Image (cartoon, rainbow, N blue to C red; front, side, top):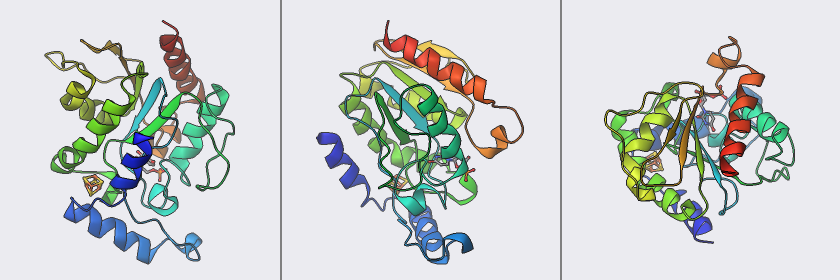
Length: 228
Ligand code: DU
Ligand code: SF4
């Protein structure tokens, strides 16, 4: 599909000097527990069917997660939470995501990161977000025919979406809608609803800011929106 072509293409991007340097350095230095593995060390493409009605929009690959395995949210603790929740919601065929050949398949969900290369301290800069935006634009253009719901994981993903809403033929409300867990905004000019969800990072899941019932509530809401 065109999304397969996009995925292949983005994997060669070198537009952000700082992120290219970081993703490749991490891939050489590695984490001790993964010393015997070959890290991906490149941009993480999207994952999931090209006719998904739900798009999960993350922040950026984790240095030893997607930057190691080559699949978004795969091989890190954020992914443990996300994929387990997708499985509970009936949107994934298994609850775990450890490597690109683990047999995981998503149903009706596609997952992408707003910034596709692992950033130092999990913090991309606004210019890096803007440099990566064209990849998100292309992704949205290709998903547009079926897309109904975007689940934005965290404020960074939420903020990244509004400048590219034109890719769906829509316009961004003024003032920009405020991010919150459970915040739902019908995106003007599109059939798409933006749904805010606290990020599945350990900062939230270890501290109880985000619980499994809270995450399950978001995916239940997302599924309900696809039926409307
Ligand atoms: O805790 P962790 O799984 O190593 O993730 C670190 C950091 O990266 C956290 O803020 C979540 C974010 N992240 C993401 O947005 N997308 C991914 O695929 C993996 C992690
Ligand atoms: Fe390219 Fe995006 Fe990676 Fe920057 S973050 S190098 S734009 S894929």
